[in-house]
Every structure is written in C-alpha cells, then in structure tokens.
Amino acid sequence: MHIDVLKEIGNIGAGNAATSLSKMLSKRIDMNVPEVSLLDYDDIIRSIGGAENVVVGILVSFDGDIDGIIMFLLRKEFAHLILNSLLGTELSSFEDISEMEMSALSEIGNIMISSYVSTISSLTNMRIDISVPSLNIDMSGALLDAVTAGFSEVANKAIFIKEKYFCQDETVYSHMLLLPSVTSLEILLKRFGVDI
Image 1 (cartoon, rainbow, N blue to C red):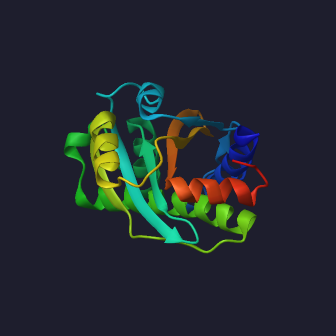
Image 2 (cartoon, rainbow, N blue to C red):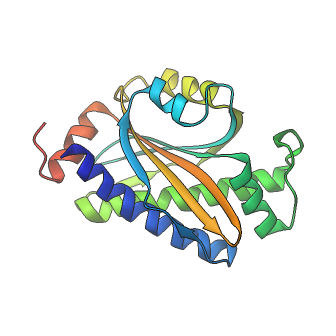
C-alpha cells in the first residue's frame, strides 16, 4: 500500500515534469511509467550506477506542512540533451562545463523538482515551499554522503523515482530522490490514508 501511494506521486509528478521539460526544450518528450520505490542509501547507490558514477546533483530543501530535501540526479546523456537543446552546445565531459551551462541545468532541475512538489502539494492539500536549488557535479556516492551528513533529520529511506525519457532518437535517464523527515514521511502517508 505504501508503494502504491508513492507510485501515484511518482506517476503524476513525472508526467508533469515531462510536460514542463517538453515546453522548456520545445521538443516532444515521451516517457515510460517511472519506477518508484522506497530504498535505503546503499540500494540507491546501486540503482544509479555505483558510488563512482559522476552525475549532476541538483538539491533543494523544502518546508511548510512537511519538510525534507529533494535531489534530482542527471546522468551525462540527459545533461547533454538539455544543453544541446537550449544552448546548442556539446557536452563531452563534465570537466569542461561552463557557468552558463551549469545555470541552465540548475534551472531545468528547479523546474522538474517544482513539478513534483506541486503534485504532492495538490494531492495532499499541503503547503510546501522549496529553497533556491544548489548544483554540484560529483560522484553519486559523494553527493549522497554530503546530503545525509548535512540533514540528520532525514528518514533512513528515500522515495526513489527512476525516470526514462524519450526525445526524438535519444533515450535518457534521471532520478528523483525525495527525502522527507521521519515525521513528514508519516504525515505524507497518512494524508493518503495509509496507517503507519
């Protein structure tokens, strides 16, 4: 039952995110039904290609009726698709990324995260405010370690959403991690009628 509730959040949120992305890039974006699960950190690391896999991490904190953090993880192929569509630039390596390109990725991440937050807010009738996003490019293990070290109130499990998008002849992947505080996860599930 918990997973069914999380899948509902993931499906609607991902659909809204795909629509926002399509408008931003002025391209048709299709997607598979996202895979939604409740995972601990070791499982998350495995699911995103291992601790040494270099990714873009866009992090926001949220508060209001519930609080916690959200991290949007982009693989290089997805980052390249975004930058090529918006700026006409090729991204062969994260080492050569410019300030303008980082700003563009941060804005896309902010839009995608906002789509999920709006979905949760409207489904639960709760007020949720998000912070200005911060962007880092690092190994996924280092990004997640920094998150867990900095937010001790976060539950030991995260809502993990794996998204698969199709744009013309390209297939790209991203991951959304919703890490509510322990109390907020309980509030969220109760709003969906799930007894803890």
